[in-house]
Image 1 (tube, rainbow, N blue to C red):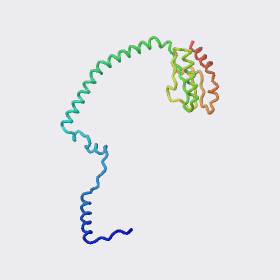
Image 2 (cartoon, rainbow, N blue to C red):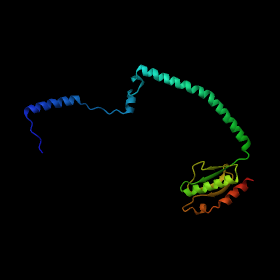
Image 3 (cartoon, one colour):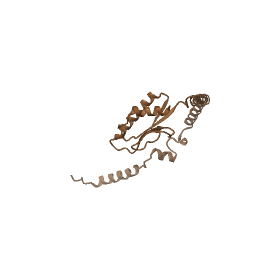
Image 4 (tube, rainbow, N blue to C red):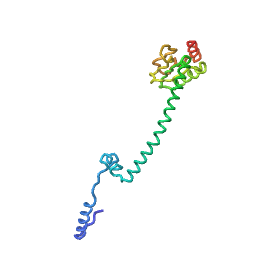
Length: 184
């Protein structure tokens, strides 16, 4: 449909209306929170009233007072008890406790299940043994059982490819008995 024709009086009114619209509508710049913070607006200390500043200062002082007594009394006692318990643990149990590391690849769940199986059997056979699963990032296609110091390696399978037959063929009872016999 074609637009309507303007008459002379209507044209003057539209021109005046258009002129007022351009003066009243201005394009505003987009102001984000981060831009406002950079410019010093939006919750800046300068824009807060003195009453708000006083309340904020009181809250901050109250929080600091509440935190200081707990930190002074509680932390020292906790640290002393932790130190004592650590000394007791290292004195008596260091000679008895062994640490066995089981490194298994995360490529497939079968590595994880076999490692958990070996861990459970080891803990049953030797209650004082500490077993760590992947203390560091494991190598790909790796299944290895060794002492933590790295002196003794009980089994080491590297660069395994699917279907991981050598790992699945491991006799867990035999492996655990080797570890137990190695400790005596």
